[in-house]
Each structure stands twice: as structure tokens, then as C-alpha cells.
Length: 371
View 1 (tube, rainbow, N blue to C red):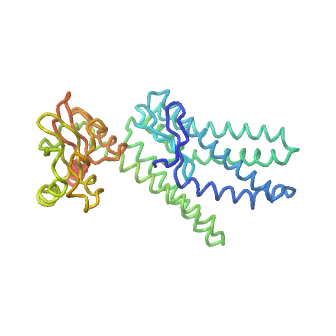
View 2 (view 1 turned 180 degrees about the vertical axis):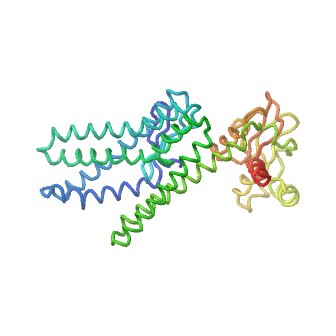
View 3 (view 1 turned 30 degrees about the horizontal axis):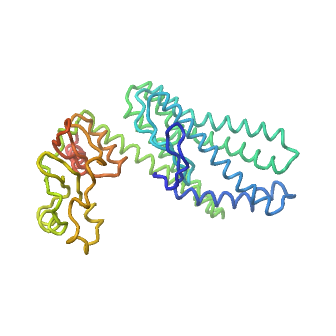
């Protein structure tokens, strides 16, 4: 869930918008301007309804951001870094870098968001009590009070990936002492919730509510995929537990000179040798790394002209890991940096390369052996 539009940083956390956010922003503004506000306040002019619709949509997503910031603040208080916060079509997501180490921390982080939404619902309802006589103020106030109440209660549904699912996982984790078992139970409940939403959406479709039915089914589909993803991630974490990078890394990393033409590299090393990753340099001096993806990004017409040194990723820009690094942490780093290989270094010495393919092959082998 990478953001495409940056909104800045709060507490050092990058805040951004996913491209899907613009779709839901326009739909929500349209719904408020054409449907909700004219029905609730028939004395509003069309331009006023559209203006209020846009302002209310912005305030709603401000509320969603506050919800995610509450998660992030508690995570930071518990010593857990937060990679980013992104607003997207279903609301928002705070990308926490690692799982909490205790059920108590999990509970506090999960409950913070719904508590913030319910507090905002109370705040906007209090404003509504004050500004009722003024339609231009009352209209957004009561809507934001209702939507934040719905947001808080919806997120407390006890199924992954909703906050209520994380609360459920924290409780099960506390009583069983087993994070993996707690994850499977919470994700299983999340799948039941997802199928319930899909069934609800089908019933709405049959009753003639096309848009609402499709939307509810879409939410169910999203929740189902997220729940399955959580279980898969838990299984991978379990499979990689106790394994270090040094146990899987390849020590036979091919070293090539900076001035090697890409055409020669492609025909003699990639196509014939099957190599996908190369270190660029000479002797003990490493200038950078060149991968199959880097080569493929260069037009074939340029392969004769360009050299490995001109296309490589400079050594200073590379993410690196040590042989003692936990394998799951290395895989997480690959995902974060969107790379398929990591140089393995000890001190300033290159000792090997770890590839995503090696990690996944190891996981598949464990699965086939039933380990």
C-alpha cells in the first residue's frame, strides 16, 4: 500500500494518499452534495451543497487520519517504528514495521484507533448541539458525528484485519500464550465476517440496491483477502523463526568489472549461465550491484553502448544485512525496499548475497516436508 501523493510527515512518519483515495473522495463528495445534504437540509443551494460536500469529505478523511495516528502514536510509545500512514479507498492504514512483542502492546495499539473515532464522534456531536440553528455548520457536524461513530464501531468487529480482530488476537494471545494460534483464530473469525459481508451484499443486489450491494461485497472481498494474507504471513514468520541469513545466503556471488557491456553480460552470463544478480567492482572493492531487473529496464538497443557500471545500483544506495540477521527480518527489508536481493556483509567485507527466491524456496521445502 504505497502512497503516491505525499502530504508531509507527522512525528517523522510519512503521510500520503494512495491513488484509490481520489476515487472514494469524489464518490463521497458526490453522494453528500447530491443525496445527503439536499435531503437533510432542503434550503441549501446546489453550490453550497457541493462546497459542504467537499469540506465534509476532507474532514472525514482527516478523522480517518486521526484514527491511524492514534494507532501510530501508541505503537511509537511501545517502541515499535511506524513506516508510513496511507489513506486509500477503504479509509487508512498505518504500516507498523513489526508485530508487538506482547499481547498488552497489541491490545493498546489496536484499541487506540476506535477510541479516537468514538472521541471524534462525541466531539462533532457536541458541536452539532451548538451549531444546530446554522445549517451550513450543522450539516457537516452531525454527519461527521455519525460517520465517526460508525467508523469506531465497524472497526471493533472481531475479525482480522479490523482493529477488533487485533483486539481479539491480543485476548487469545494473552490466554494461550501462542501468537500463531491467536492469529489463526482472529483471521478465521475475520473470514467469517468477510463472507457475511459478501452474503449481505448479494441480498442487497437481489433487492435492487446495485451500488450498495457491490460496495458491501467489495468490502467483504477485501477483508477475506486480508485475513488470508495475515495467516500466510504468520506461517512464513513461523517457518523462518530461528533461521539466519547466513544459513541460506549464496556465497558464490559473481563479480564483474564496471566496464563489462550489458550485451556481453546478457548473452554470456544471464542467458547461458542463468545468473540473475552480479556484484560490480574489482578485488575487494565493491562499486555496486546489478540485477536482472535492472538490465531488463534498459532498452535492448542500448545494451551494446551501456556498461554494468552505468546501470548498477551504487554500493552506497544498497540495503545490506549481516549473516546473523534474522531471515524474516531480511525478507521484511526486501519488501520494504522492493528489492529481490540483499548483499550480505560482515564488517566491510562482502560474504554473500541473499535472494527472495532462496527464502521462498526454503519455505516451500519446509511445507513439502510437513515441517
